[in-house]
Image 1: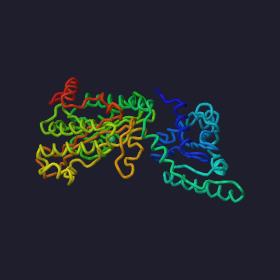
Image 2: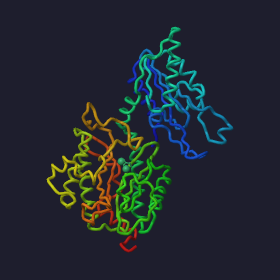
Image 3: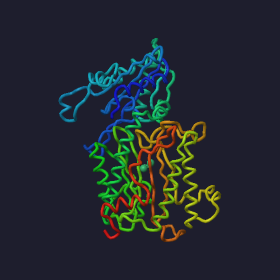
Length: 445
Ligand code: GLY
Ligand code: MN
Ligand code: MN
């Protein structure tokens, strides 16, 4: 399954309609980023840019122009020219002909001609859409183009009198996923689920966290994928560091390990967290906390329903987590008062989910008219409650200290209720222990 030029063209048509007549849209892909000296990070196209073009090469700018009516629009792609010598060094380029033939551009130009050609195109437009404030260097170039076009206006041309935030439109287009996008996200989720399953099978006491991370990367790599974000593999109290990415400590028998890792497939992300015992068996304290998080997660997933608002799963999760902390004696008091005072905060300090799509923390507003927005069909959200008991927390019984647990799945809003994309990796204590026992784990392994 891959997206075709028809999918990208439909997106450009929808954008042109939303722009209205006599408008122009500019968008650049991501810059190449250097890791150190001559070594660059593997290039990843900008998500908005790729969403509209399907073009994954660096150094490219897309332009959409509408005319008398928005149905009539033209798509131009500025990209690197073919260059046999440079292609020997850095690989294949589509070039100007490829932009037209393979990427459906109506017009294509060498990226070096951008300054010149844009001034020409701006001169006949009333509205300019671009990502205001996204990239300071691009803002400066746009300002220069606008000034130049405005100066030409005195000589009789028309230049844009309105500059509008392109992200407002694209964010809202992307927050609702098409069937094809959901298919790609399902593939990403399946590969990530397989990686987590392998991690549960491969973990052994005294293994290094990075060695377990390598087991995840093996599955991502075998499927032509890269991690969608830096993998978190935290043993014991490292699980209480929300963005722990050092992954350089040994995994100890008796501890849990929290893995928050998932791949990106064809520019679409997944996002999974599982927490399981290094030696294959949960202790009583770990079980008690784990089951509170799991109960909260099931209930929060159930709250992903049309008619509910984005913050409903969080409210549901907070209630169950707080009740669980009360039942286990980590909090004392009355449920509603504890929730109102956010007494759970030292143990649960993050939200319960975010939009997921081409970006792991995907675009799309979370509020509409100052209220948490209603779920709509085709939205994808993560559901990821957790409990984190600091190793230094002397207010709780010693047995709880240094335990960190999160369980995260990816959920589609459908008219038939929540659809979990990441159901292929187990999460009940029974299923995790059974899977780990099959891989020859034992408390003394
Ligand atoms: N993996 C990033 C997150 O869960 O938000
Ligand atoms: Mn997440
Ligand atoms: Mn995550």
